[in-house]
Amino acid sequence: MQIAIPAERLAGEARVAATPETVKKLVAMGHTVVVESGAGRLSAVPDAAYADAGASLAANRASALANADIVLQVRPPEADQIAEFKTGATVVSLMNPYANPHLAAMAAKKLSAFAMELLPRTTRAQSMDVLSSQNNIAGYRAVLLATHYYPRFMPMLMTAAGTVKPARVLIMGVGVAGLQAIATAKRLGAVVEATDVRPSTKEQVESLGAKFIEVPMTDEEKAASDGVYAKEMSDDYKRRQAELVTKHAMAADIIITTALIPGKKAPQLISAEVVRAMKPGSVIIDIAAEAGGNCALTVPGEVSVTDNGVTVVGTTNLPALVAADASSLYARNLLTFLSLMLSKDGFTLNLEDDLLAATLITHDGAVRFGQPSSPSAAAAQPAATRA
Image (cartoon, rainbow, N blue to C red; front, top):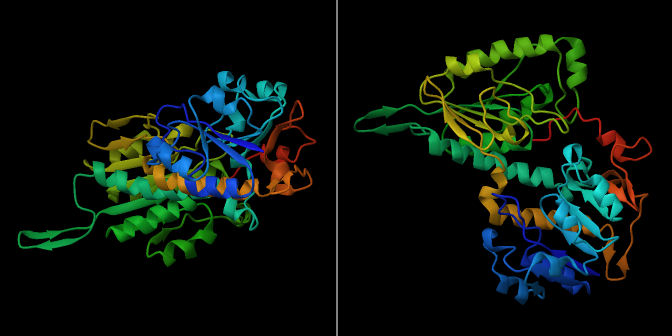
């Protein structure tokens, strides 16, 4: 099989879908790997490293894709790229299936397209879970980004000139990103609080040395929130949550929000009124900015300062700011996922495999995503926080 690794075209996307480590393993299996020249440059991977791993280099995307049976990339293919694919090729990437306007075009090209964000959160899928690997990086980078904009120290410092109090950090949403943000902020010496709609996360928060802020729940709400993912809660719960958040936000120096609901606009956790009640110099890092943001004042892709001196950071694609490690983890996720189909003996697409069935969004000329008969249909009804 010929496997292609094109360079990413989206502005700000510094990641790449394969590294010399994963290329070497694919070549050892007897497959041909073609990497578009410059694909790994922003991830600190020069062309020579790919060549040394056994890959061939293509001068441009069209020549890399022309004969490719399998294409690995980070972002969804755009219309011009779809036209360059070999008919019937297999494409594996993040596909943004809920808002992707090109599913019909991919189906018309008879592409077998796999959306990695639809991978079920099961034990078997852990080593392939790109959302977990990338959100882990996002949580880490969010804290470092906060230190960039926060005009004070993070840890407590005792100096000859006096004592500096530690920063108070509030993490909203205790998924993968939130837990990493807690751990990173604690390592930097901050006093950390965290909140989540799932009471079961309390133990995780406290195990990292942070204080869990618990919103009082009714028995019904407890039952609804008892699961792996955070669910969208009732209006009454949101009111109680907002009241509690306002109190803690006013005392916080840094707030990091992480709540994402697949297929929907990010839920609003911080209103404009809450921001106006925060202290001058406070910082909000909105990890959900790419989906509209958890803060009412977030502008995706921009950093703004309010009249009362609060910095709201809407930087999108935080994993790309740690491109080398983000690419390394992402590439390993894809290599493990490919092992479900690819071996030394060739390529086999087993639609009885639950992981393949759940992620396959176009196949054999048809759009599978969201169709009642498709295993992806269940994934098209999201209510879970994935950050």
